[in-house]
Amino acid sequence: MLKKEKQITTSKASRVINVIFSRLEPKEKQRVLKIIDHFVMSDLGIPKENIPWLNPAKKNIKDYVHVLDLMRLGYAKLINQAEKDFIKKIH
Image (cartoon, rainbow, N blue to C red; front, side, top):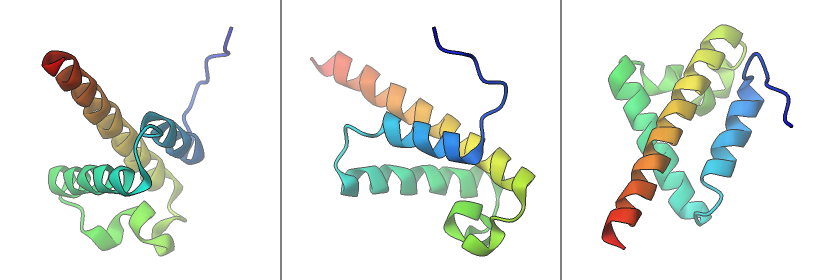
């Protein structure tokens, strides 16, 4: 049985996102991640240069990075589930 973790770290969130989209070709995965980034920027109104995973100079702000990584992970899960549901409906 897997031990339940109390906190998702930035690196763990990135690994989960990579696993979620592992079935995709690298170009398709990048396209989906860019869509997610667009949602994060649009929904939160954060300029691209302030998004930690798009600007390495911002990675030293740990709490900010953590919250945004969780947002990105949440969007990844939603998009992944929507795609699965769509595929089920057309088959």
